[in-house]
Length: 511
Image (tube, rainbow, N blue to C red; front, side, top):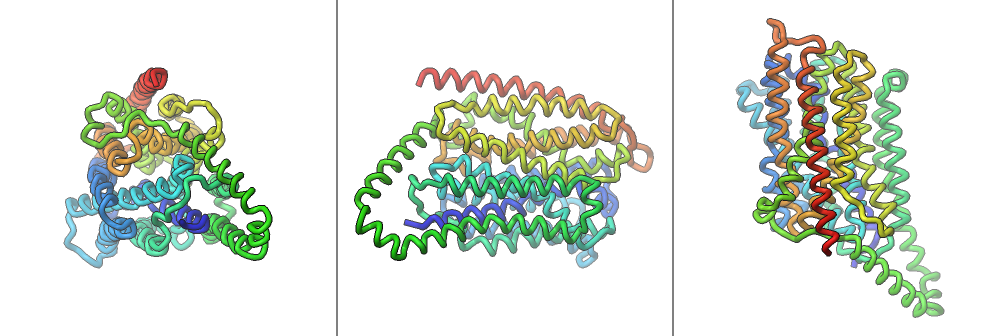
């Protein structure tokens, strides 16, 4: 039976992996430069944004691999795919290889997008295995760090380059190398550590939430233009790195506690009150396990093929499509949206969306942790509906010409998209169980490339219709129709989420 130290160490490793795994989220930060370097049209650029998401169409491969191969191998496969996908693009734009066509770039972007699925799958599986009694809290907490990826990459790039052309190259280089390096560091302790289901993890999670919230506050504050202009770029990168290393304090404290208990104090306790303590602990553990069992309810435990025949799946699929997927498409196009409105602060916007996305992903985990011991039934579809309503309002707010509306809308969409993404992990397990989660959830998120293509391509067509002869579009008309359509779809998704909520309430009332 493994110690709590290894349990918390595995969580820290997953936090690091999630922090660098959102490589597609920094695409808007260098998309305009990539467009110029490769002489692409807006439609071609949108196709590349779709290609990054298209890798999720093959997300069932890592799901199946996780069932049959060691998790460290699945992790390394994912990081090597990312190295190939982004690395070859970097070599191409730095003129080290010269035989890549647009089709090659497209396929390499698909490969890089698929690499994210492999690392994500390992993170989800290890978290669920190592924190069986608190899996929804642990998954939500670790997933929140993926929302910081764009902020982390932007801080690193800002620390050593300012040239627009060099920035695009730097992003591709970091995207190819950083996930591989972190995967090699984490491979030893990101694994199933065979823990007790009754372990009391409350103190550790409270400490982790404090550190996580402090990290998020730093990320948000350092993203504001007035602060970031005064903060040296290298200092910003060092600051975010320190916050990412801070969670190591928890397994270190647990190790010190274990050493203390293994000394004379433990001998004294065992000799004097060992039997009494054991009886008390057994009672606590039994009660704790019973409480968790009551909380962990799922509609049915089914595989992917049977899941596709369920009405709940298709409701959930279209809710996610018009919520989280739509938000991700907006964030993918953030660079071009900012440029069309004459806003030059794309990096600040990307950092802002990343930082607020981080808090959005963290919110469901905090809610789950605070309500985990209550008898209050948490309706995840209702939570999703509550998040999609302000998202719809944010899209309509973008119709305003005021510059502040861009920042407010981006923050709202970042928070809501992050929260829905985090809730979706728990929703998948609630609807379809945990046994086939690694495959089922990858089937659910396959709607991301579908939505990316439909929504992204339609936005590119509206953009091209308003563009001048040089292919550039400037002004509010570039995305006006797009925002109206996206806002309306988000409202439709809100209604579908309420329908799913009503179906689940009916199910629970009969059980």
